[in-house]
Length: 87
Image (cartoon, rainbow, N blue to C red; front, side):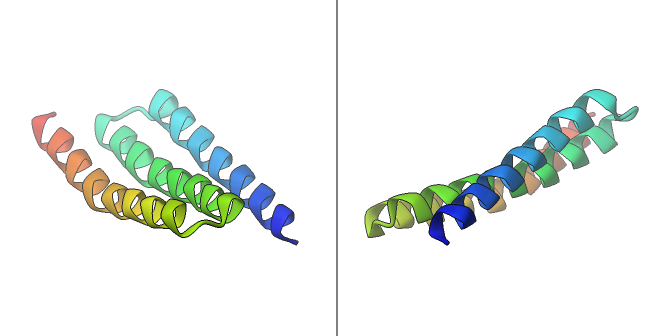
């Protein structure tokens, strides 16, 4: 059951990362590219890191993963906003 959950999280994370990469290439406008890159890549990264936390099942790794996810969720929208203002 645990391995299935890890595989599902990894697959969904790579899917969202792929969608973000395709969105950056295929979207016509800079603002749409920023939206695709910030939202889908943040979700993909969070899913992959959650799978890492489940795989290792260690409090140290889980704490670091939660810190990374929190940092990503806090900084990705701000970075996208600053890039949008610069464009």
